[in-house]
Length: 81
Image (cartoon, rainbow, N blue to C red; front, side, top):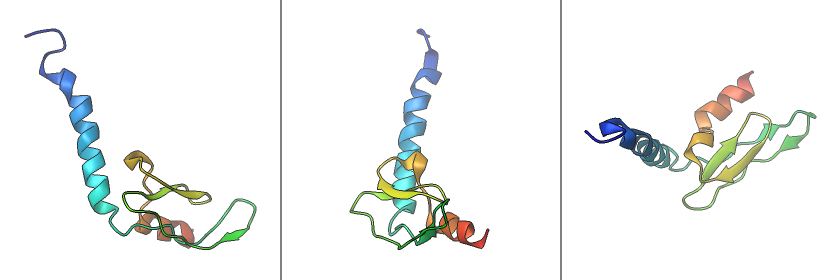
């Protein structure tokens, strides 16, 4: 086998798999209302096509990075705590 062997392609394949899975899960995932660290209320908003809600419990925005995806389930968990 050459340098790196069969494992060298795994990071790309793994990243691609995460991106595809996140985009499928993110269908209809918009940002729900939230309260920031200063206690200010922010209304919910819809993300454009092929973007989804990203960020944290206290700061949300739309993005295309599946590693920053914040699902509606996670957002609701933020509201409970």
